Figure: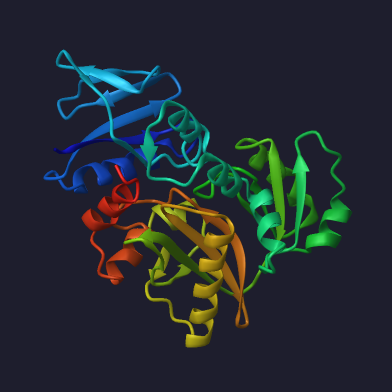
Amino acid sequence: MKKNIAIIMGGYSSEVDISITSGNVVYYHLDRTKYTPYRVYILINKWVVFSDDGEEYSIDKNDFSAIINNQKITFHCVFNAIHGAPGENGAILAYFDLIGIKHTSAPFYQMALTFNKRDCLSVVRAYGIKTATSVYLNKGDEINLQKIVKTVGLPCFIKPNKAGSSFGISKVYTLKDILPAIEKAHKEDSEILIESFLDGIEVSVGVIKYKGSIKVLPITEIVSENDFFDYEAKYKGKSQEITPARISNKQAEKVRKVAKKIYTILNMKGFSRSEFIFIKDEPYFLEMNTVPGLTKESLLPQQAEVANISLQELFGNAIKNCKI
């Protein structure tokens, strides 16, 4: 019997359109001989199943079901394609756990932890993982510009603590630009992370559970045409994404080992894509994305392709891991 799969997409953050694009890629690549996929839009004002003919069917939040053509549809598994809240931060996954529906992501606590950049960095530092020097601010905190610069130096990065796709991030070169950058970041989140600038090769490393074990995917080197790997660089072709990365065997071995260690430390499941900057031969961890972009052009699918894993196999593997 084919399994009903709810592909949740959209969300409540600035990443809603990107998420819908990712979700639709999953929808079109799932194996129809094994699964009956449904596109489920999780939006601030509605939760609906969106059909191919443009009809919308409301989700009953009591049991996450829908009435379609006078038939009640329930789901064997939820494929999480929501970037940002409430998918990547774990909120909706706690709901699925409560009502007993399996999903393709890590448990909600792990998702919440990795989505909170400060907390995630604090945990991995305790295990000897190298990271940038940082300052953390809540909205309303007193801002001591001199102290910030003394701690992290210039240039530095100012970013929302809990946001993705580089929304709200600024690279700051002067003291006078710090406050405007903080205000920009606060449009995305009430919590701000200010980090020292690491000048080196940037790489992205996908780690997944694949056929019962942890698999590190081929490494991607990021070469941005812009000042850093911002929204334009990620989604509007303003970067080169080179897989496999043009790094030494020594560097590759180190970053693979660190990426796998972080995945294990955080007790992750499902997809992850971690970002690093090399300072000489040492990889410095920036952040982990637990609902990375899933279009063919996105980094994780690029890495899977180099590893000879098709999108159909990549997405099907995530569902198999749910053991439905």
